[in-house]
Length: 397
Image (cartoon, rainbow, N blue to C red; front, side, top):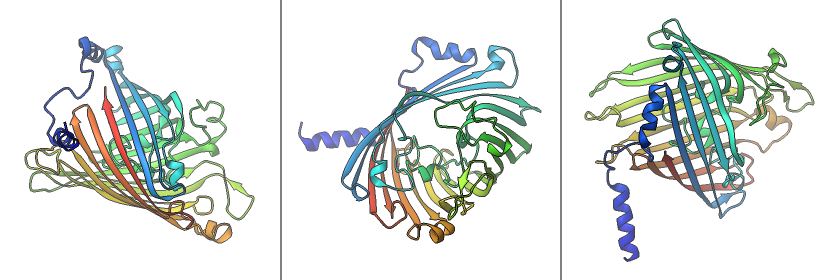
């Protein structure tokens, strides 16, 4: 087989719509999943691999790297297991290896999120949640991942399936630690959602946090977020969207720029929206969605004072490829005026643009070519604009 024939065969395999099949590689082996689900136990396992290159620009141009990791989820519904209505629990175990090319690019945002450290296994979430008032209220407590509650977005909130850049995954001005905390979720009206939370501001990554969580109220980070669910009229049916606004009180101890003074309790605000703009008449899951974020944090102690991001996602753009997803997004992180005036006159802003196309090769396998362009990585005018290319592999077991 010639190289050209092999390339055409690969292209045909990638562009052919996958046949209906189990969305998990292992399926329901020996009926084990079904038996567990009857007991109220759901199990999920995902593996992701990232192969990246930095052909030009950044701190170390012409570099390459790779990273990977897995996510194992066990969700228990006590209604089935213990006949305890409204109680659910979640265990999320992660593992990661290699740092990829994040340091080589030298940006404020990591172009490859989830390439933070080498750790074969650690607990990312472990919590219990109890529903009240006819499921209009939930109280969740334990070891929480705050980004699963606050600053969420339908089109830019998952580095395994959507954008790879850290700053297109979450808003960097919002502190979203993993650690001990509690969240109260409320639905006072049909289209209104409220979330109130408190989190350990001093927790060290991959530690339980019992030695820091109870130091006092001033060492907690607090959140209040309101969300409005909107259905816009569309030619093929309603177009759902969510509009979120939030305020936080950052409990981390930080140094005030231009002084030796250290303080806690700095305010910040943020907003996030996702809105479906149109969907296919044949399948409401296919269509074009818009997202946007914005936020401000106290520039006296935070390097990034202002932030915005925006972009589009289209599911099923190409005929016959109803499960493929293409996304285009951009962000800008704007530095603190006080930091620039008092300590670092070169610190300005970093801008990034990302484009990806997620190919549903099989229901359980997705390949995602991704390219990013980072303008002034590090925001200090020291590095040339960087180009980052990545191929992401994701397997659902």
